[in-house]
Image (cartoon, rainbow, N blue to C red):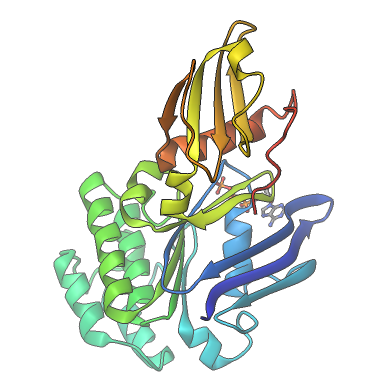
Length: 298
Ligand SMILES: Nc1ncnc2c1ncn2[C@@H]1O[C@H](COP(=O)(O)OP(=O)(O)OP(=O)(O)O)[C@@H](O)[C@H]1O
């Protein structure tokens, strides 16, 4: 099966600053992928590398089995909306659609016009006069109407109101189902993503902490709460993700392929948001290291 995105030892440095370090990752095709992590984790850098806007310092990245932006055909297969949803301020909405039509071989003009109509955007309005959310919707419309096999979206919902956000995410699902496309979207709105994504990549501090299908993520992470002495030893095969508490009472998050049952501790399976927060908390407080540290899980 073709991968939507493959990275091997992918590293990007800006001068002395490392934005992405030795990132090895395989994202299967046909998924809606949530790319999550704290500010400055490297999410935009990974998406910009995948779009071919920047080149790796070392390592490799392939998108749909090829080097990003290596040919007009490859460019046509990938849709990308950058974080600031860039549009041409002096061009009207209709001009943008016309530009899209002329530049993209697989352009679906009906889809673009219908979406602009649904959004109640005036085709004669200049992009520079649209609100931030409307501009984001225009940029998304251009990316969707390309009918790409892979959509890369950098925080597409950040400037949208809650209803628009929900509609956008549902629209992306439909696009995936209708066109067999893959979507990778970065966002801080983890609870929104949980409803639509089926694969999760957690990036913190330039490193991939977790990359797995959502059902695997939610089926293998548990929160254990109880007396600290009872949690000194983790269940067999469990890896510690994060631990908080005092000398007497602790809460730990573990990853375990085997079901975890509590004897003297309370055990709770975790949803995606709690899992993501646990990895982010671990990155934010690297010390003290656990006895059996959960290394980058993949
Ligand atoms: N053009 C650049 N020049 C120098 N440093 C950069 C550049 N772009 C990103 N960085 C640095 O690389 C690191 C990763 O940035 P990146 O924008 O990829 O993070 P992010 O996860 O998308 O963050 P956010 O959630 O805040 O958008 C940060 O430390 C950032 O300061």
